[in-house]
Image 1 (tube, helix red, strand yellow):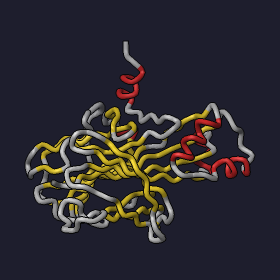
Image 2: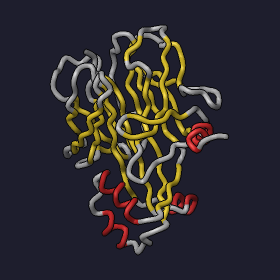
Image 3: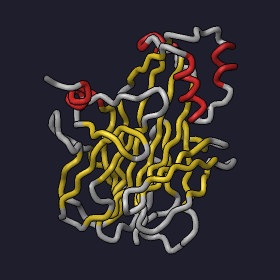
Length: 269
């Protein structure tokens, strides 16, 4: 008899609790040599820990990897876990990119939604909700995941860049090759424009598995300076909360829409 968790894994679903379940791409190793096995999982959870989600193309709008100017789609069989499994290509910086189909979450109480919105720094949500004369219970949100991961093949030379996702986080320096020892600058883009004064949540995982969570805000250019340390892995998260377009609202019966961007990478020793 299957458990609920097993059913979710088989269905390829990406469940999200009312507080905030992140979604990210996590390679088994952030640095691999050319020709070596390269695997990466789609993960859903909290504090940089969670379940792995199998590959199901019906749940995917876009899944590809870019090196230089070349973009290669990720292909797989239904149920593949990890979702990406290939021999590492030529040396360079691999940028993995993923966009999910839209999913829904229903809030039975206002408190659950308010808790999530507060966590993601939308302090004005109650005023926005009431201004639209929305019910305080039994309403639906639709959400979409946009995830990226930076993997070094060999020396990992190359640069991250905007990939055309509706919302994304772009590393302005290569974490594997930069000579600087200060914070790593990243830029949050929403509809191809810098997203100013937006919260970026930082999940920092130490070599012993300890995870520290902090937040920082972007400046007027949408740039945040991420404190990083050698030997640590990072998951960055940014969320847009907006009124859905009429077609989206009708298709999902939703009164709110969220877009979730994530970026994962590691900093070498």
